[in-house]
Structures are given as structure tokens and as C-alpha cells.
Amino acid sequence: MDLKQLEYFVRVAELGSFTRASIALDIAQPALSRQIRLLEVELRQNLLTRNGRGAIPTEAGKLLLKHGRGILHQVEVAREELGAARGALAGRVSIGLPPSLSKLITVPLTRAFRQQLPHAQLTLTEGFSVLMHEGLRVGNLDMAVLYNSERSPELDITTLHTEELVLISPRTSSKPGAAKKGKAGKRQPISLAEVAELPLILPSRPNAFRILIESEMITIGRKPQITLEVDGLNAILSLVKEGMGHAVLPSYTLSNVHDPEPFLLRSIHSPRIMSELMLARSSRRASTDTQKMAIEVVKSVVVEAIKPYA
Image (cartoon, rainbow, N blue to C red; front, side, top):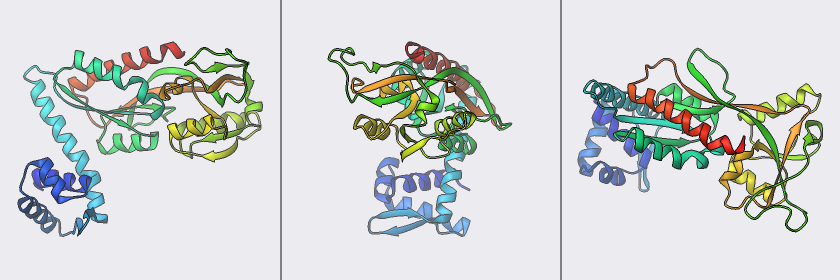
């Protein structure tokens, strides 16, 4: 399989258009079409469905796209290792971040990379744990920050931080001046049994927080009263703000909203809901020197960013 042809195919499939891909790759469109057709002939499969609106991967194309991204990434890793033999920490490092943490650490992480790994290219991907695990498996991600990941021979996992989940509620009524401008208000702690009586807005399974909340409630013989299942952090917080229900998340989640004042935070007890923040990478692929340095950068930035919320 020609790697250049594979790169062309991946770009067309991602952009959904031969025209856009030819511009991005700086190659004439007829030449691009010809190379992808040669790839289809070699694989004896139609990879793209061409229509007036663009190009859509066929089922075979979707399969090749998934593997192709990983193959191209591994080629970049090989080039990086060859470059490291010349003494330069360079190459691409791809890191997955959970939505609850992404906004808080994206800027400091990028700054730290520019300072400590100026010749490396950083790629950040935001997504829930299921997507991160898949990215690590196929090689699209070098490492990922995850919540409560199960131990597995396929993953090398380091615990970065253990934190409490809190109840995030709408500020439906409070005395004037009860909270400082731009800060979320706080009220007395609430028991987990009381939380079980509230209408909750939770992500759908198999989200790590959802599983953790349900597991802790089972220990006290309760189950959550789920009023809405929403797989989007900003959407969850918007619904809480509008009084549609309550959320159970880390306190630093509110760093994702412009104004946290409309929210109230309450710590949960009897028992507390403790979540582990972890850094995971595939144990099947050796780390390059650049990736090893990147791991230390991620650890430092994450711990420093969440320290004010601990």
C-alpha cells in the first residue's frame, strides 16, 4: 500500500470533498482522483461514494479511514524517533482531554509545550472516555487524560489526582450579595441519599461519571433519579442554569462557563463520591523521548491547573 495514496484518501474522507482535499494537499484534483482510484483498484474495494455534494466513505472506506489514521500516525512516530537519534525532541504528540478539563488546561498546556518542547507539534482532542480509549487503541492518540479508567494490560496508567464530585445546582433563590460576582455560590453539604431524590442531568452510559455515581448510590441502596441524559458538558451546565435539574461533576467543571455565578455548589457526603483523574497511554507502543517528556509536561500542568479547586 502506497503511504501517499493512503494520506490522500484520509484527507478526502475527512474533508468530504476532492476539491477541498486537493487545496489542502496542494495537488491537482485529477491527479488526486487518479491516486485514490489506484488505491481502490489495489484493494479491490470502492472506498468513496462520489456525488454532487462531495465524497462519502463507503463501509470499506470507513474501515480504512480508522486504520489509515493510525498507520499515518505511526509513520510520524517513526520519523520522530529517527529525528531523536540526531538529538532533537521533535515530532507530533497527540493528547486526548475530557470536556470537563479541556478549557481549564488547553492554554497552559500549549504554553508549556512551546517552552519545553518547542520543536514538537501538539495535537489536542476533546472527547469522552469511550472515544479516548478507541483513539489509544488504534494509535490516533499517544496519551489521554481519563476518569476512573479500568486497569488493563493494554494501557499504562498513572493516577494524576483524586477528587470529589460535587452537586452543581441552579441558583434559584439566594440573598443579595450571598456570592461574590463571578463566583459560584456554596451551601451546606448534602448527603448522597438526598442527592438521589433530586432530578439529575447525567451523561449516558458508559460515561465514567455516570457509572461512578450509580455505583456509589448502589452502596446505599439507592439509584439516581435521572431527568435527562445529555452527552455534552456545556449542554448539561446550560440545562442546570435554566433550572432543569442538577449535575454531579468536579467543581472545576465551572471553569467551562463564562459566568459561574448562576450556579450553587454543594459537597456530597455519606459517602463522598471520589473520582480518579488518570493519564493513560497504550502499553503496546513504545514511547519516544518526545512523548516521555510530554507525559511529564501533562502531569505538571494538570496538577497545577486543578490545585485551586482541590
